[in-house]
Amino acid sequence: MRLGLVSCSRYKLPGPEDELVIPELAAAGIEGIPIAWDSNPEADLDAIVIRSAWNYWHLPREFGSWVQRQVDAGRVVLNGLHCIQWNLNKRYLKDLAGVGVDIVPSELIEAGTEPDLLAILEKHGWDEFVIKPLIGGDAHRMVFSRRSEVLRAQNFLHRLCQREGVLVQPLIKEIRAGELSLVFFDHEYSHCQRKIPKAGDFRTQEHAGSHTQAEVVSKELIAWGEQVLTAAADILGSRVDYVRIDAVQTQGRYLLMEFEAIDPHLYLSDHPGSAARFARAIAKRLRS
Image 1 (cartoon, rainbow, N blue to C red):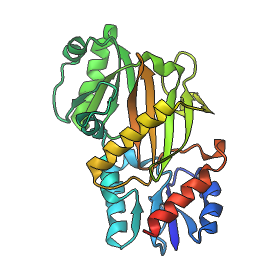
Image 2 (cartoon, rainbow, N blue to C red; image 1 turned 90 degrees about the vertical axis):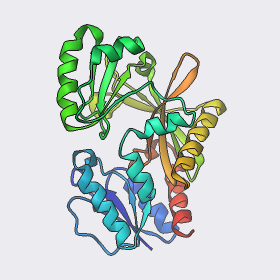
Image 3 (cartoon, helix red, strand yellow; image 1 turned 180 degrees about the vertical axis):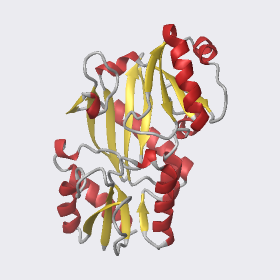
Image 4 (cartoon, rainbow, N blue to C red; image 1 turned 180 degrees about the horizontal axis):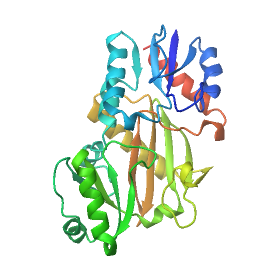
């Protein structure tokens, strides 16, 4: 069994974390072959798993077409074509909210519209807020602002909406204490990482100066994550082979920040045994 570990031309191959996974896959009789979706000739593969294609939000149509070609070629694609297509666009958050998942409050604005940002803020009572594209990652084109700076933020929002759909969300102040990232393999909880912004910032991405640490979490949080995962699987009509569920706790409850089911950073190096658990989940899927 030849499995493509899909990264992108932004990174030297093998991609981040793949060196931990390749020997664990080999122990299960699977040859892990690092490839870059946007530059490598397509190898002779039986399956692919998206691992660090961390430029797809710059080329979403091209990436979607590439994944479709893998399916058309008869390759098994993890987490499945339908899951990837659904998870590409952050409107999936509204789908999850529609079945009872608590998400960060979100105002979804379609491309080509002329939103009144001040009216949105007044309707929800938001002061500090974040604007982000519906298709995006790594905090790309994500902007933080305050109601006192609404004119400048309105101009940014107008320019963004001319090209693409947008989410406007309140800044959850507790994010400054860290975002909790729960990792599940084959619907089984594996581990959790806390991502902590640098002082004075809210972004949890490492390039923004954040740091991370392994986290021991409560049974309550794990159960919440399981409920989110079950809700997503019900929407998709299939199980999710691997996922990172990002949460923030505020006012005594957990809110979903992101459901990362395409190419999440899994923090395998900080959690002994997690690479083996990931490999077992992949092997189970490929042999099902």
